[in-house]
Length: 449
Image 1 (cartoon, rainbow, N blue to C red):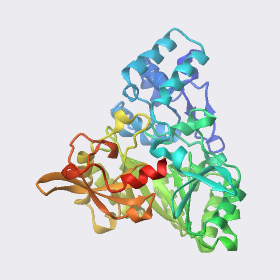
Image 2 (tube, rainbow, N blue to C red):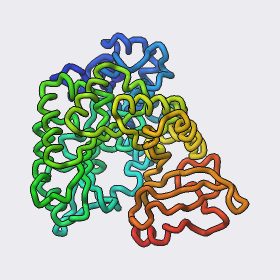
Image 3 (cartoon, helix red, strand yellow):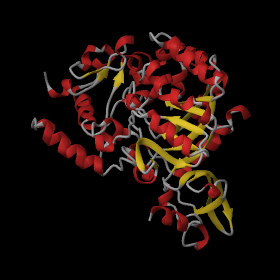
Image 4 (cartoon, helix red, strand yellow):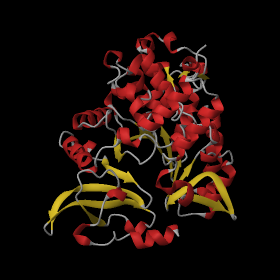
């Protein structure tokens, strides 16, 4: 079997096999994928030698409009595209594959390329560490006072992989890049020593790849009476898009729903932080049924996702997404700016254009959908929102504010940057009116020293 067949990964969507990756499955076995040319398959192989690739039958059979490939947004959401790699890097990997170089040689080059793609954006590996009793907690991050992130070891995979994912480093097989923990008792001890923490975000990967009893084993120690200050349990997941069967017809779907209901009855605010990128993800009957069943447990579904060139860089797409979500009982929460990692050059949208898209979308929705904040950059200092563009003091400026900050005193403080129609991230902006730095930078330097 040729290399291009053996390395392309298709996850089987049969209920009992939803986590399985088949490394020997020919793409042509799926009728829709047989339409891909040999050149397209080779390009997928090249890019997926560097960035992770995984897709299941549900996505292929129900979400992708194959008559529009390669321009279909869901196709680009999950299938690697040639332009996601720098042309020189693409050519180098392609050359090795064409001459049938060893796996070790391909891996060595791929690892070198990955190192240039900022695998841990926003200084998360260095600055978000958590310690208890002088011991660093693997798989735990604590950036903001109120919220702790937990990466359960069993949840560090997804039903399919998004091509833009800022957590791509979790999935490339390099343990040194991976966040994961199998010690919920240490997390419980951390909460006991940090009573200011009110929110837990269980993240990944995707926690909803876990069986219900595994998910329960991670959370149960955190429901102890002495941890009453832990008021909110959030679960970051793409399962409502990639595998809504998780809540409807998986063997343990009833058990999972009962688990959410028990957490609600225990007095916790349970929030499913659903990642959506396009309204089509809501457009299947089973996706809507999954939403209905989750809401029936008392849990709240909040939606978030980045603004992505080639996928959703349209105010009409976002307006329809938010309107459809409100109709289904999902709360719009965030429009993010695509992070400075991975295939950033393929997806990034200038901040000025992002703000225009957000504003035009907001003009098309009612107040119930205007809960969506954005465009928001998750930067090293904190979440920075673009509030607008204005003329102040004779200069055109971006009006910015912190939604969250490493120092909570930064939150909601407006600050101003010189207008730059090409800038795509905070570090490309300069302070307005000739100032030498933004107000938070001296303290942030001390934090990172």
